[in-house]
Image (cartoon, each protein chain N blue to C red):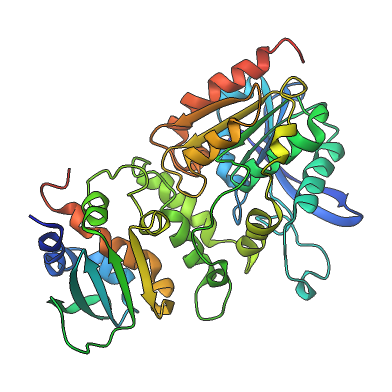
Length: 287
Length: 127
């Protein structure tokens, strides 16, 4: 009997980010000449969050979907000497990693879709590098969000990092999400490296305040889509709508019965929202 | 049934959930949960409720307290809670609940406590 194989292919990419050699794991699916769609996972997680999108023929018939594990995440090898450093993501380092990936893969004006911290950095791409992208999609994104817990609990010897990370974010999943998808999403959080979720949140909490800056986004240069789940109380619907109110021409939607991890917590529901967006991007005439 | 009456059913609800008791097998702690103005003292032993005392207890010592308004618990215990009422941290972010005391045992067993305090959702009339 022939094996049952998922359609995505996983590989390791050698590249330099800010002059430091990295080995990044990524998966891709779709035609080589498809519109490149680069997917950015949430803080403390990895590219498996996009496995349903990578396996969706309605997406991959037109898009070449690429999802990489950020440095220090998933199967991407941390840089040499990691043991002597405390990991901290910044706006600059995150932006550099995305642009380095797109350059190394020789992607022609890709679409970038990111969720949570990935959504926040997408806003920064729109602010600072819009001309490099065909369109940008920010899931669960806002220019700023009010913190709702102390990140000091995420990395200490008397609390299991993976379990506390998963338990904290479990409330960001909509109650309507299928239990299997909910627990798969939590499993990914339980597997992050020590201190990595906390290090990602440095960008979210300390370094990545984009209030005021989002007013500089030019959606004529690069269309921008914001989609936020109604059950996300980290990046609330109000946060996203407030952000959208400062960006002329932005396309904003609040997604019913979804939370902070739409693509992994309820892939069937998410495609109701994302397929029309991808359709608009594929047919937009000004690209 | 008032929210406090619903919470008073916790011993039966936890007894009926083998999986939650299994996941809480490391939890042995004294803690307090306030449903509006009504305090409940929980004595947890290996994930099971050794005692649930309703009402004030003079000088009772507890590791931590979870407080919520009556409305917060009522809305939290809907079968499908509305956005913003569906998680303990959504409640604390909105200022209708709080965590006080030594939060270490709470954070060490966070999913257990979240699930424990959501058990009244299973009672009839939660919709």
